[in-house]
Image 1 (tube, one colour):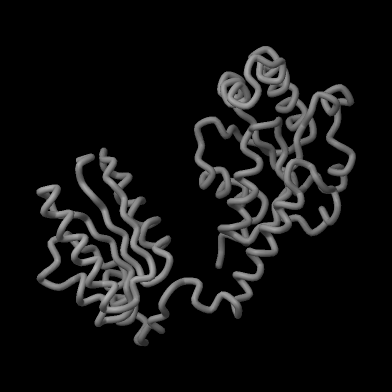
Image 2: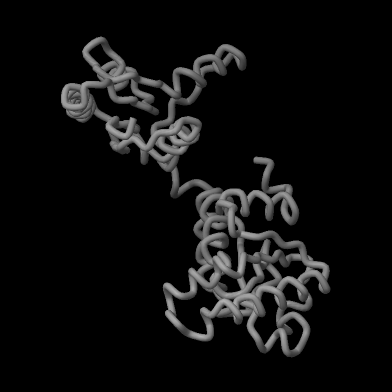
Length: 274
């Protein structure tokens, strides 16, 4: 099944089609070739994609899987017609039309998730959150922590930065992150700037062996990356968070999506309701 292609065809960025399609494909033991074709919003562009799908079918001897999110009926008909040699899964038709019948109204048939970005408060909030997370990455700034939604704690390389940015980009969460360092362990308490905001804090920990591997990629054969030091730092960080009553989880075997959802569930459950 590795010798098979999956197309994600959209009149927007294709992110919706690819995210949903990958969720389905992950149920199967396959690693197909991914082909994203965004901004297919004219008949001419759709015709080019149709030709590519059919050529792929001829070359591979199997019909490609084609996930589409196309609003325009004329454009959609090019890819879904009898001339297409792919297996087409029309995500809008599958979900939108039954919902139209259920709600008793027609959908707005808006092309692209970000077509009205300049007028979208949600989009503006996400940009603000991204800027906030970048400015407050790795303890760079302790300013404006009062407006932070979440403050992530953990030792260096435990996954704080990618989780902060994911929360900002996907959920519009203003997420700061702060490293726990040996000096904090010597003092036996949280960094001083965080004391007033303990209720916003959430900890990330990691298996010391995994942490040592990650750090060795950055600073090979250093004390920073040694297994002994990693065990010490992780143990001290977990003890401190336990002592301070801060919730935490291990990032060792969890995806960023799982970590972010857990943080939202525990600290900002309101953000799980849209």
